[in-house]
Figure 1 (cartoon, one colour):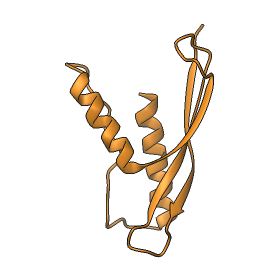
Figure 2: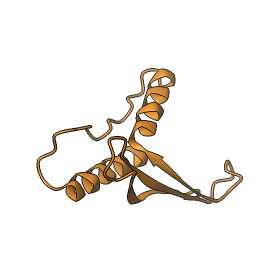
Figure 3: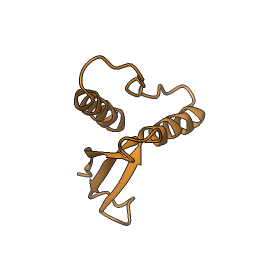
Length: 97
């Protein structure tokens, strides 16, 4: 049976303390599918790259619904760590769907 696992992990704040700071996430993929040459891969991606991916999927999806991304909120109530963890979980769910 073919199996593919994807994980969103290890959020890191880049350029912390500056106006152009952002968070990126480690995306880890493991599969035994014959469709993939590499059985594991790992990259770091930021939220706006997920937005790009979702737009590409919407263009090519036809009538198949594309999952939502977690919201982008400049005014989050709570700690930054909480926001980052909630976003990480939302990105994980997006990729799983």
